[in-house]
Amino acid sequence: LGDRIVTVIEFNEAFEISKIASASDTSAKSADLEKAQLRILNDLILETILLERAGEIGVSISDIELEKAVASITNDYPSGEFEDVLLEFAVSYETWESRLKKRLLMEKVIEKELENRITITPEDIAAHYKKNFQGKKSEFESTPASGDIHEIIVKQLRREKAEERYKTWIEELKTNYKIEINNEQWEKIAGSQGKEK
Image 1 (spheres, rainbow, N blue to C red):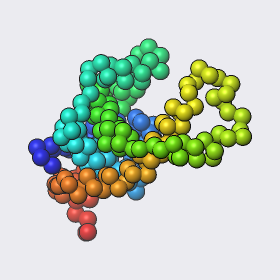
Image 2 (image 1 turned 90 degrees about the vertical axis):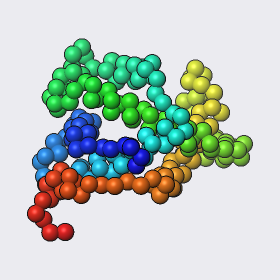
Image 3 (image 1 turned 135 degrees about the vertical axis):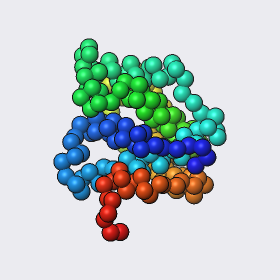
């Protein structure tokens, strides 16, 4: 895909970070390990496509956006504990931060390409309100500080419609970008050397 290459080292880093996120031992069973590896491979293919798309449409993550995201995550841990988690999984802070930046960039592309292009009609809002709020005691009635219900409904509808269109959009992107997998390297990663296909 253009000049983008995902190396074996990057795959392994992504795999280690996925173990942190799932807080599980993926080395326990061979079948589970294979599923986890395939999931990471598919995630990296999607990531590569979305990063390429980000470059095409001029989407980026500023240092300030990254700092806010890092603070949001690390502030949930007692002092020094987050670093201990990274150390436990043998992932450097720089690697974790780089993966986080890519994740934020992917989310921003999705938001720009899907959520911001969705039209919400007054009829959509009325139907959503009737289905989810009308005649029900709502948390929004008792807490006006939580925001305008109209804005909340629009956000919910935008998210729902984006989720509905996501799969089709991704499939369209996949047809527009050519991804090549080095089968020799993949067999080494997946531990399938010498197995019959």
